[in-house]
Image: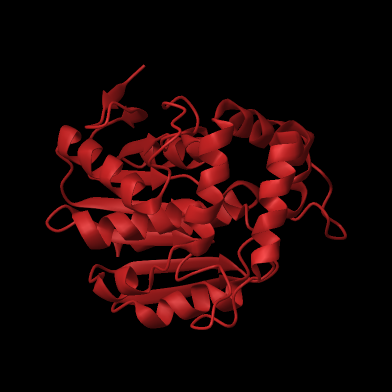
Amino acid sequence: MQSITTKDGTEIYYKDWGKGQPIVFHHGWPLSSDDWDTQMLYFLDQGYRVIAHDRRGHGRSSQTATGNDMDTYAADFAELAAHLDLRDAIHVGHSTGGGEAAHYVARHGAGRVAKLALIGAVPPQMLKTAANPGGLPREVFDGIRKGLAANRAGFYWDFPVPFYGYNRPGTPLAEPVRANWWRQAMMGGAKAQYDCIAAFSETDFTDDLKRIEVPTLVMHGDDDQIVPIADSALLSSKLLRNATLKIYKGYPHGMCTTHADVINPDLLAFFRS
C-alpha cells in the first residue's frame, strides 16, 4: 500500500499511476478512491498521470476520531501534494470531494494547480441558513446521522438508490454498482463518516470559490437528488471567477458511474482546452 503519514499521525492511502500531467481525483462521502476507477483507467490511457487518495476516515486511510473537517481534509492533501511534488495538476472533485478540492485549491494550491472540475459538488453550502435560504434544512442531515448511527450497513444499502437515480422510472437497479458503493462505504470508519456529514453540509465554501482563479468546469445533473443543483452548481458557477457551467438533463448524483461514457470525454475536452 502506498501511503503517507500526516503531521498528526494519520495514514493517508493513495494511488499514483502513470506519467504526464497529473489529474487528482477527490472522492465523495462515504466512499473511497475506488469510486474513480473508471475515470482513472480512462485518463491513464489518455496519457495522464492519475492520482486518487482515500480521505482520512474513509477507505484504507486511518479511521480517525478527530480532524474530520474540511480544513484538515485540505491540509492532508496539501501534505500529499508536497510529498508527490505535484505541479500543473488538474483537480476533479465529486460531491464532498468537490468541497475538499475547492478548499485545497483556494488555500493550498498556489503554484500547483492548472484547472479544477467540480462534479455534483457540495459548494457553496448545503445547509439552509439565514445567509443561504435555498439550502436543505438541518433535519435532512440529522436524518442521515440518525440512519448511519442506528444501522450503518442498512442505511448504506439503501442510499445508492437515489444516489444513482435507480428510483426513477425506466432506470433499472444495477446491483453490482450498488454493492460496490456499499463495499466502499463500509470500509471507512463510522465516527469519521458521521463527522463528515457536518463537514460536507455546514462548511461555507463561498470565500474559497471567490478566491479560485484557475479555469473551473462545473458539471451537475439536473436530477441530482443528493446535492440539488439550484443551491449548488448554479450558485458556484456565479461565484467562481473563471467558470464554465455544464448541466446534464436527467442525470443523477452518481453520473460519473452511470454516464461515464459522456462525462469522461467532456472532462477530457476541458483538460485539453
